[in-house]
Image (spheres, one colour):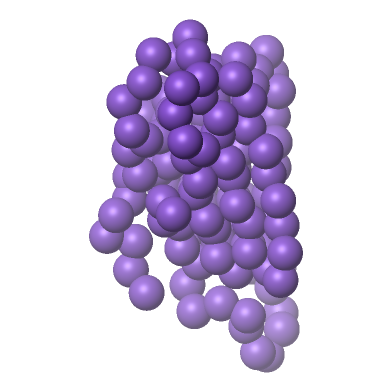
Length: 121
């Protein structure tokens, strides 16, 4: 499956209205839900997640913000993805292709996923 919808642009909103986000994981997939005052929840699904990293706001590198501000995009030339693929010695993979996705959420931080796909629900 391709990621033709990447980057995932969130619906427009005043970032000051952002309230919180929640991450849930089940059956190898993850859903990141953002709550914005006066809007229905914004939910992004990541399929066949192999790795997740959360970095708090003040520990995020400036490179992690540019191009990812309230937007899911692929990380180019990902060292984390390359290292994971090199270390994965299993003969049967649980994924067809992996991508390194990142989103920077102001007042929260960065969520990153090594996953097969990402899409808005």
